[in-house]
Amino acid sequence: MILSALMIFPAQAEIDQKRYAECIAKIDTDPRDAFDSAAFWRFSGGGIAAAHCAGLALIRMGQHKYGAERLETVVRKMRNSDEFNEAPKIAEVLAQAGHGWILAGDPARARQLFTKALEFQPGTSTYFVDRSIAAVDLKDFRSAASDLDAAVKFDPKNTEAFAFRARARRKLGDFEGAVNDANRAIALDPDYVPALLERGSLRQMSNDSDGARSDWRRVLEISPESAEAIAAKALLKALDTN
Image (tube, rainbow, N blue to C red; front, side):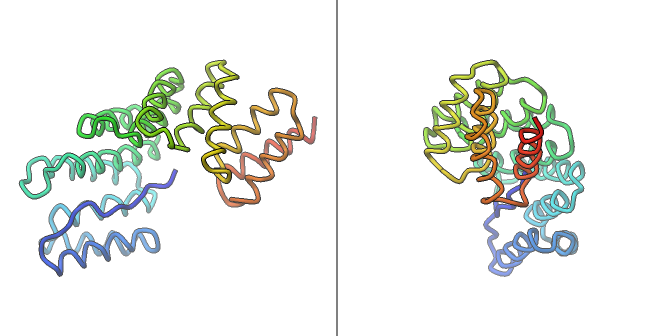
């Protein structure tokens, strides 16, 4: 899972706006530098915006627990702030903290935060998908499927939701529903690797070895360095061994 380092706060002063944008931009290329810049800025008056950048940088550095905790502190400060106490912004930071907790191996806490995000932004498809990810990590596939039902209700073109629901339905024994969802996701985006990986597994289950190979090889072509590619290689090896 890749945490998206989104800019949340439009700073009032031009110099602060520029500084915040630069800090967020560094997270992908040099998170250590981003964190150092945010820490220095925070102690020189950067406030909530600097703390937000620092939290995201910590997560990107692999300090998932500390980054998630930092973002939860940012949320508390936002709620007590006249400038930043806006529901969409609070929901986004809650979701970012939730992703941090998933990466830290605490899906139960992540699910709580995604639930809070939905309280601030009801009907947001992305947050239902996020909460389903936490539910899957908790082996609660029924709750995951329910969240993904809501996700596609609010956004019928959410490729990710259909792909993830395919997996949840497979785990629940709904093979036909899983196949329909995997095909729907691929119809929306033919190169969406999680859907291709899942459809390959479904094809293997129906004794369509050629179809499974086709999907898994396509994953390797599209995204050879991804986690899905690692899984596809293992599945292909197992298929060819049998």
